[in-house]
Image (cartoon, rainbow, N blue to C red; front, side, top):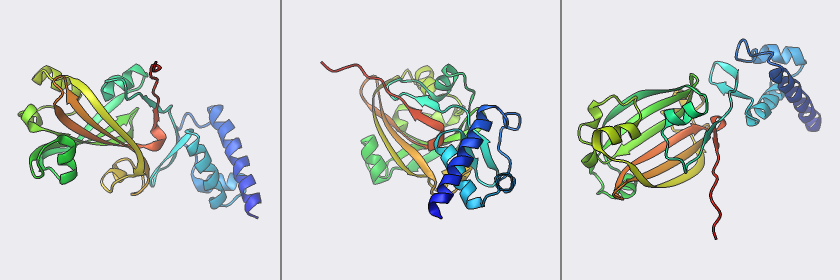
Length: 240
């Protein structure tokens, strides 16, 4: 019975994939509801969701909590070696980017954060939490932790802008070395509803510890990406 169910899901997945490729759902930008699709394919919701999960894994569709399944745009290509900010990266790929500030205020550094920023536990840092969208779809929740020593009064500025640009134009600070850590993990409780998925849903967690042109550690970014919205692509020169 299980093999039969898997086979049925594969058939439904292939049929829906072909319909998506033909642009059948392009006008609505989303698939019909699961109940209607189950009726169309004369199958159970369990088998249908298995097929939809396959399409999601292929990057053809994505789900929003309590809203249904939507046709996916191409994944945003992210090359950590390119020191480019979010909006510029999206623009180069023909995409429209938007940034929403959730909150921004001073907080005390935890022991883990203090180690990343090379400061003392309990020292004050600026925390900026933002939600970022591509083509109207929320794809990234990010927490920025800044050493306020280098950015006086930054919290009074328009933080929907690129921090990279603000660093340069307001403080004459440019990025230098950077350390990346990329791990899979669950979305935190605050991020999940903002990204319209269930708490604990899988995410791609990227931590960046940034230094400036003087090799001072200036900030740490904690990025939580919807795993179905991002493609990490790196090309490095050969080592002789």
